Image (cartoon, one colour):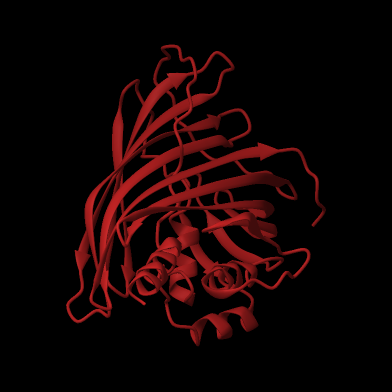
Amino acid sequence: MIAMRARTLHWLCRGMIPAILAALACQQSVSAQVELRFRHTPNETLYYELKQSLTTTAHIAGNPVENVLSQQLQLGTHVNSVSPDGTASVTKRIYRIQMQASQPGQETPLVYDSNEKTELPGPLRLIANSLSQLVNQDIHMNISPQGETEDIRLPEELEKRLSATPAGIAGNNSLDGVKKMISQGSIIFPEGPLRLNQSWTRELTTELPFGIMTSTIELTYAGTTKEGLHRINATSKIALAAKEGALFQVTMKSADGRGIYLFDAERGCIYASALKQNMDLEMTALGQTVQQSVVTDITMRLVEPTVTR
């Protein structure tokens, strides 16, 4: 029973870890000051492939138990119109979600594909259902040339469904959670031109059932690659303030991450991004404490159109 409770806690917290991106190596050259801005063309659609791997290792009844959850998303951003100041009205859509999760003690993983409407058991079903409700939904918003996202609008039926849904373990099942996830999911450039090694920061907060998580991301302009892409290095630190009276307690022992964004200034868009996040957590619930380490890898890249809107 103790092992089962600890394993349940372990599964619940797998969906909590924020997705942040894995380090890539690339050559760079020194460049003069440059002003990086998103540029949008009416009726253009950009397609991206996002991959995430979440590896968790927990000690249950004195034994290490490793689980791996991987996700692959096909995303698109269609430009509806562009105002004189460069702000674009866009529609974002998730076309497909594929997931695979290891099963302790079994060689065959659990597999989910939004195109096949696969039914999944237990906690993994909660994660799949949370994401699948966003598939093939047109999400409208405005994006400034600096990358700021405003006026996020979801389909009416989806908004009603999310408004009636609790925030959940990861805090992203609710309407506010989904909007925050969308608005915090991209890079924002500072005003004015960037010089080599110039840094700026962005702070993101997420309210969870067990506390408030604050992520501080430092971005540094690192010049251009030999391919002419602009490189922005990223480092992240995460702090967690526990909430009194929560059903379970999570303590952040350590957390740090590193990664990069590659920006195509000619096209005015992110070409690729990657970041790796390491976290050590202590989770207490049901009278049991579980030590858990989490490694998150997320990569995203621009791809040629393979789906039609």
